[in-house]
Image (cartoon, rainbow, N blue to C red):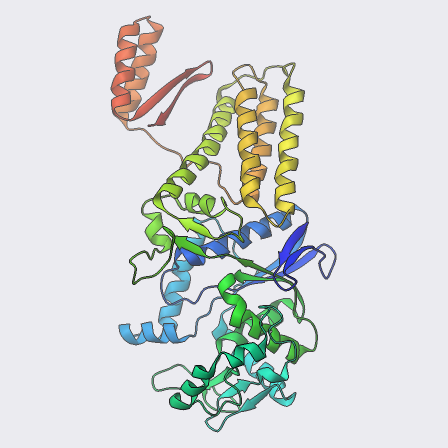
Length: 473
């Protein structure tokens, strides 16, 4: 299996630190509101990658945090007149509902930043003791960026070039009173409390941690000082992930993450998502118009490192594609439920070999840097092959095996193949029963009239050897 490593800027073979095991950390959301569809992309992408690693036989320790102390959370709490804890707890639960709707597996551990403050204080003290951090007069603790010689290795940025291009920033520092920094690029590890903010006691002042140190500590606690894969959105490469590397490697004295994976941006109708542009959508917004399985399928329809454009037309296309797969599974289920246990047909062995070839094609796509777009193409080829091979004369064993193979691939992508049970009202059921009686009595005119009446009610009938199938128009 090969993955694109942001650190090396190329595809590399995946070789875990410990054979058969993967330690993976994915940056989670800051919980101050409902998650938006931009948040959903890394959730879906890396959940799918985790599923494929497990499909390949790896034991995956998958950690994804909730940032539950942050300026945005405090602002939301102040606006509502409630505590920050109330805001974060509320939106963690709402986030989990949306994740369940998108069929995202719960992480091995979902740590909360506020529950790991003690470890963060210990890591900060280690950085101070080693000379990588310093304490300002007001108790703010800064990371001394210049002390870490490899700073910029992930984002491929040169610190001298950055500094020469930030004269305005250095002037702004004097204006805002942050001249206690040794360098404009030094970042906060611990900040003093402000009136009305949550705070914790520390050796330097009462306050709270900076954002970057949170992930370094949570990753260390639940995965160890060295991990296999760190992942998140491309917007986190700099400065968040760059700062994580600087903190973790300085404090622990060993390389932090062996591989770095980042998904590209999600745009809305060709533009960056923004509340000011009126194109800002939460996952909950989408759920009012589509099953969230459609959103998941849409997200996987492009390679994760390619920018993805969200639009009504593309969502409709995703819905149509997903329905093709679900209808095939539904047809197989119908045959399994209503068919007879016939003997194996003469070509079923050849058809099974063809199905296995599409499975290998799926695996080849996923082995090539989690190429879900090509993996879905392989599933569509398998669906076409199944639809061509299966008929009323197919053996039950053959149909069952094909369904299992298709379902196995869909499970890797997190696609739920079992359609929600739809029920018909008594009037429609009575009409279907009356039509069957009319057909049996050879009253075809009445049978056709009932079919037309049902069609006007958006109920489509299909007569098969196993019985009458129906679906909504």
